[in-house]
Image (cartoon, rainbow over all chains, first blue to last red; front, side):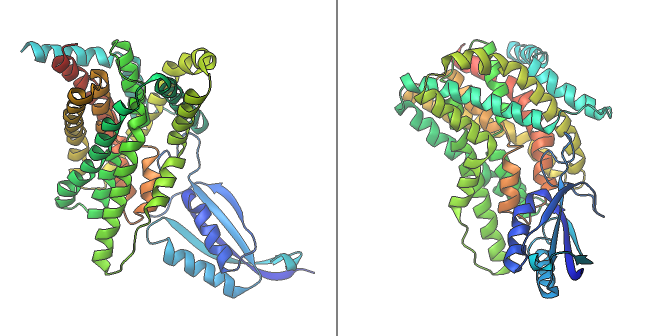
Amino acid sequence: MLNKAKKVVVVTEKILLDKVVALAMAAGATGYTAVYANGQGHRGVRSDALSGHGGVFSNVKIEFITASPEVAQKIIDGVVAKYFGNYSGISYVEDVEVARPQQF
Amino acid sequence: MEVLLEFFHTFLTQFQTPTLAFLLGGMLAAALGSKLDIPDAIYRFCVFMLLMRIGIQGGMEIRGGDIGAMLLPALFSAVIGMTIVVLGWLTLARMNGVKKDDALATAGLFGAVSASTMAAAMFMLEDEGIYFEAWVPALYPFMDIPALVLAIVLANMYLSKKDGSTKRVAIWPIVKESLQGPALSAMLLGVAIGLFTRPEAVFEGFYDLLFRGLLTVLMITMGIEAYQRLNELRKVAHWYIAYAFVMPIVHGLIAFGLGYVAHVLVGFSPGGVILLAIIAASSSDISGPPTLRAGIPTANPSSYIGSSTGIGTPVAIAICIPLFLILGRWVFDL
């Protein structure tokens, strides 16, 4: 009934939303969900103008669910290589079980 | 001696203008830990309204005016913007503890223009009854875009040389992104509307009416933001602080000089010269940073945003506006 899949989560700066999504879609993801987030890493660096004030959340948490572990690995490797050198962020993978596996 | 007294007197009077008062008020509130905060949507609305008002007025005046007179100041604006970046490369980038790409990004922001500083300057000139051509604000993109593009190109050239990779920097995407930014788009839209349609009624009844009030709300936001960004400067070399304090004045003087040349050659108005000087002294705090963040990703945002928003903009508004007003009054006998 439920099928195994991988959920790749990327938490990073809001300005990277479009770029990370583009990277993931190119790697084989079929969709994404994004929520605005706030938080701080071990360095506590703020990088946007007007971030973290005026009621604005300056980070974004993007989730990609994919049936293929290779795609998941590609997404993480791509994001780490291309963006995490210059921008703040973390990335992790969770195991999930999904309904309607053909969507992923 | 008299000039010095006049300077202090004008300076003090400027502190009481709503513009500066709200800026300092915002900084003070943030310093005292107040939770006062202007919602992001309101701030963006203010920027939109201000730039529409400026644009519509500019467009309406270009309708009747002489485009030729605009060409030389536009050329000078581009020259000034690029000179500022080069100056930053020759000064800030050579200091100890300053990374070259951070320095170029900072110089790029100082070469670019702050819409809020420009609006504050226009407000001041209108209050003082000093005339300037309404298309002077349209010089904004002529200074802003060349500065940002040059900073990004130079930084990428420097970084390519450092790691041996050759990467041609595509200029058009940078220009396009700047033109698509909310501030410039609003102003260009306003110019088009002022130029091609008849918006007089809505201009007088809405945009012009609300201009002053909205500027004060913008100033509070800038003040709060400036104080919060000051913290970031603690993490970077102290040279940024010196640069951010001194260079707006230097940049303004260069622009004043070139503006004076334009005044002599094509009749650029004294108010226009003063405004050009203040535009040059301003440093982009809202639209510049995202462009630079994308164009020079290796640069540390604390350095350039901290310098520009934390010190550059307050110095431009608090010191450069009165300074160039007095200089203009003195040079042009206003």
